[in-house]
Length: 118
Image (cartoon, rainbow, N blue to C red; front, side, top):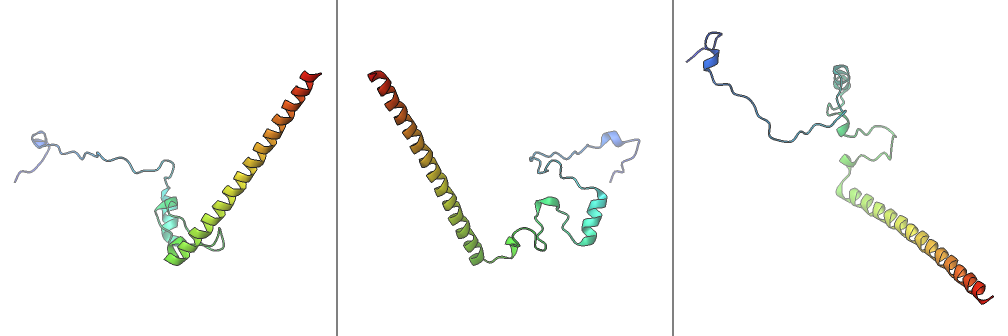
């Protein structure tokens, strides 16, 4: 057994840790020590803003962590129906715009024909 000291420290191999994996840090999400202690004392998770915290009447009042599969499926169906209705409204507006555009073009064609006939 060798003991490392100031006289022989150069003879020992230097072992460095090498990190080849990509960084998982998120920019601008650092917390001060005061904030960490405050979160710890109040029982909040120290994970930061990555995990949503559902308290009180804020938002929809739905905590997805506590929903069972049937409730999640109902929410998904409702969201899909709402999305389909919105898409249908957008399509109808596009059709109305295209009809208005066509009618304007037809009016211009008629006016140009009238000018040519005069």
